[in-house]
Length: 233
Ligand code: F6R
Image 1: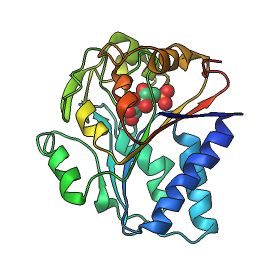
Image 2: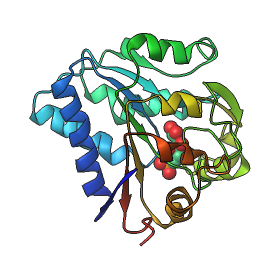
Image 3: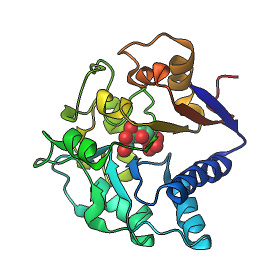
Image 4: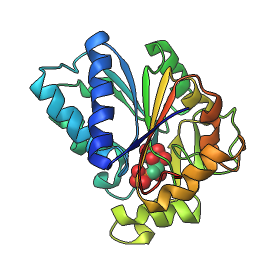
């Protein structure tokens, strides 16, 4: 794993967005793996700015999101809505080329990714408990896309995006750890003191299912983008 310790979230966003733009300049039909949540939000803003400045088209880009809630109450609570608001609607991407795991495709989401050619660049955040996508501690490293019961910790962490904690869905569709591991390149973004313990475990401890992100330790092309607050220095 390569580790970049950056001054702040803005610097991380600039570096990560540039990586995405460079990939698209090389490969106009690249396959992107995308995350939701706070960690990639600034990167998505930068991607929008850089693509406008450099006239970069997303019309041949395909995306596969990591996860989606099951039975969300309002459309605005869905990850699909988040992606439209934070990225897709600002680009010339064809929404038909954007994919989310759901009830219909859960058993062939991994095949859809494979058929598309595999993920060229996967963007990840990390949960305070070390989860990636919604693979909670204890998930098998061999897991494919599946449905999960969210832990109390994750429900609590994600309640900030909802009116009340009771509105947070209790289940999600998620790519598995094996699905994520197949990406050709992975960047993981983490900022803030509340991620420090998860990052410390990821970097310093051995690969173990108690820290799902530790599957990344032996991936050939992973870069962690950390700010000073969560870097174990
Ligand atoms: C979201 C996802 C999750 C988040 C993680 C961190 O698609 O896959 O694993 O990346 O929960 O969330 P934030 O970035 O909101 O702290």
